[in-house]
Length: 266
View 1 (cartoon, rainbow, N blue to C red):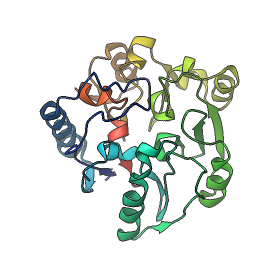
View 2 (view 1 turned 60 degrees about the vertical axis):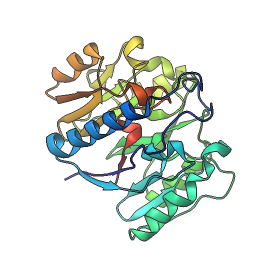
View 3 (view 1 turned 90 degrees about the vertical axis):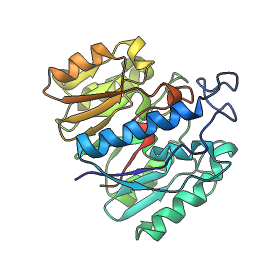
């Protein structure tokens, strides 16, 4: 059973602007956000069969809901994030405390070496990919590679709308990759092509990439993704995946969707 860390959106809102999606003028409907979050949780628990670990929401930390940025976990090792922007740096202590109180061996990066967790570190059993430039520092990956004993291939994110790797890159359980190629430079696209065979690369159209089609949660052959991505759904259904589209428009206002709202713990 897949375990996921989540945090309720009790204090979620757009209180600052640190990515191209966030605009204070585009206010979050708090009641709708809470309904959408609870719907997502019901799908994950009841339809997908995930085990959810809930952490407490904290006043003044509206983005704590995006637990993908808590850090990265492998086995009993956890590396908490070091956020680029001051607006999110207060989250670090709460995420680190959660890992410690739940028995993880916590490895901490030095202050100033930015790395934004599973938002920028994803991959397959035989190798990981690290997104850098927008939020994470490429220098963090050599340290993480040593701590986790995993090869990490850096990928430069060249479009600020796709500011974390998980907004444009989604490894699937069957070995396929759901991704938006234009989010990467020529070197990054070539590196992906070298590691992943053409028949395993599933490219999403731009309009659906901008609806966070790649920001999906894959548990076995089941995928939870934002609603409104019919071409992506066709690609995935053709590979035998069972899909669970969920409306998450309130969270998209802040630049996140299904994957951003969860952190894989196993």
